[in-house]
Image 1 (cartoon, rainbow, N blue to C red):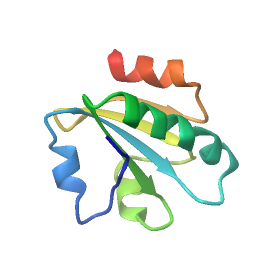
Image 2 (image 1 turned 30 degrees about the horizontal axis):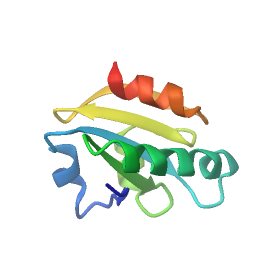
Image 3 (image 1 turned 45 degrees about the vertical axis):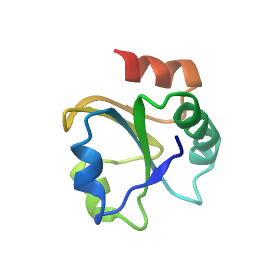
Length: 102
């Protein structure tokens, strides 16, 4: 499954997904975000049981604000619409998978 670009328009559909959701808050100009991006893409491709979305903080400031995103990249895991895990900074794949599985 590919990564979904999350915007205000499709946010509620994503948030209310039956699947565990991984949200990657990023910006195109952010170096650490560019390091995490291919890992997030890989997780999406290899794990169809998760819904993986990316939120560009420059384009979707309201969503970033709603999640208290102060630095990027920020990864947020949602289950049943609730935040169950949140992490700031670049992380290796194993750490991101651990966030999803906990």
